[in-house]
Image (cartoon, rainbow, N blue to C red):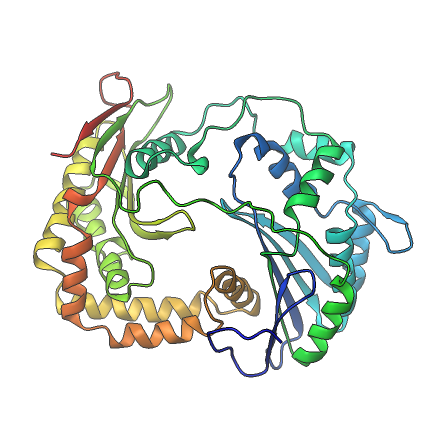
Amino acid sequence: MTPYSTPTRPATVDTVLPGGLRLVALHTPDAPLAELRLVLPFARTEPALTPAQRALAACLGTGARTADGRTLTRQAVADRAADLGAELTTVVTAESLVIAVGVLAAGLPGALDLLAGLLVRPHYTDHEIGLAHARQPSPGARPSDRARLRAALMGRAFGDHPLLAPPPPAGPPPRAAELHALHQRAVVPAGAVLLITGEADPAAVAARAREALGAWYGGPSGLLSPPFARAVPTPGRTAVGAADGSGQALLLTAGPAEPGNAPLHLAQLVLGGHASSRLAQRLRDRHGLTYAVSATLRETRAGHWLETEAAGAPGTAARLAEEAVRCLADLAAHGPTAAETERARSYALGFTRFALATRAEEATALAGFLAAGLPLDWLDRYRTTLEEVTHSQVIDAASEFLDPDRAAIATLDPGAPARHDKTEPAA
């Protein structure tokens, strides 16, 4: 077993397989299903790879070869999963490829063998790639207004970054040989994390996983998002021209943030994290400017920021920005009330429990913690931290992080006069 600097839960095996895969097997009593979560680095670090990355994620479960050389088609993979009582899905984020398997406890050994076939002996075909390509949105379609606004905001705030690069020009789907080459580079154990939860003995589960995945070698892939050019957003305002037919005015802001800062988390919730937040009361309830407004803490390998977002009727973007700035300034200057802090604390503590109400949700969250370098019991520790945060600490966090003069602000408004995308320095 490989030691780690942070403790793990009891009844847990935490080890690294010979190929470099970090394997964590966690005992969850009275669980009729075993849950597997494999998290692979899969950031869009090279724009030219984007079409192949999309195709690989869509086709990963469509074929494999068995150890004795037989080919499993998409239907054969689906039939085998059904025989085991398993469901296999893939999810792609901006930075990761996640393979999720839920399976009846008795089917776990077979599910590991099936997963190993897809990882070690994939079988991609031009036919399946063509089907996946046909299901994708048209590559030549204009990006949505929200996507263009976010790219403009993030470029203003943090500078150029691979995640902000426009997609490559439309072209034919990648060939099977390209996907096999990308698979060999990207779907590799070094740098990846596999979490398995269930009622079986973790040591036995780890031994079975080692047997199934012993032939999996390779990596690391290098598909890790590099840090932003600037750790703190550059303040200022950006106006983006609306596309023809746009029906919404949009506001996005990016302010400074700090990962794991519990007082800031509570200040963010007071600002725009629930239905009775300051932004909701001011922009929606008092002024009727928006039907959707929120504030969110964003954390990625590239960086972290406090984001606010609002949408309203055409012609309201400037007013949305004005009222959001006033809301931020008021909280930064005076802080939340004690009642607001306690409401945010209760909401945060409740959300960390009901958002992970099922074994599947818990497995997904725990795998995410592990992939981010956090310990398995991070959430338990964080709940304790939230309970201990003082009102004065939340006031201090609001003062430090919610000052609108430290935020980048971007708007898009189809009701405004026609204009090219424009950036202005902070006032």
